[in-house]
Length: 138
Image 1 (spheres, rainbow, N blue to C red):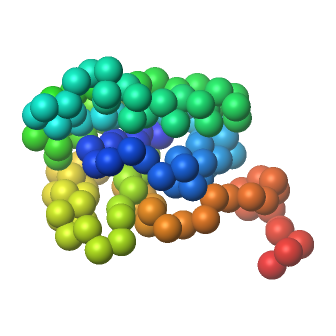
Image 2 (image 1 turned 180 degrees about the vertical axis):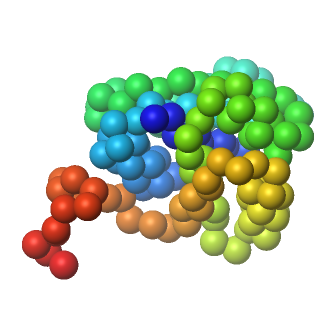
C-alpha cells in the first residue's frame, strides 16, 4: 500500500507528521510526500520542509519517498498520485485556512483515490494496538 501526502504550506506540524507516519506504520504502507514549491522557494528549502517526515519515517521504520514539484497545487497532487499509483491521499488542513480547504476540495473532485483530511490540531496517535483491535483505554 502507498499513502500519498502533499504539502504546499509552511513547515509541517510535528503532531500531524507523527500521526500520518503512525497510520502508514499500522497499515504497513509506504509514504510518498509531495512538496509543491512556491514560486520563490528553492528545492533545498522544499526538502528541508519535508525532513520532519524523513526523520519520523526512519525512526518508525516506514519507507518514505520525497517528490518536489512546481506548478498548480491541485494538478501536481493528481499527477504525482497517479505517477506513484497511490492507494490513499492524506492531506493536512490548518484551522481556519479557507484557501487550504478550497484546494483540498478541488483536488478531491479530480480523483477517485480516497482522500483523508487530517486537522493540524489532531494529537499524535499514541496507542500501540493494531487497527481494528480493542483498545482497553476506551
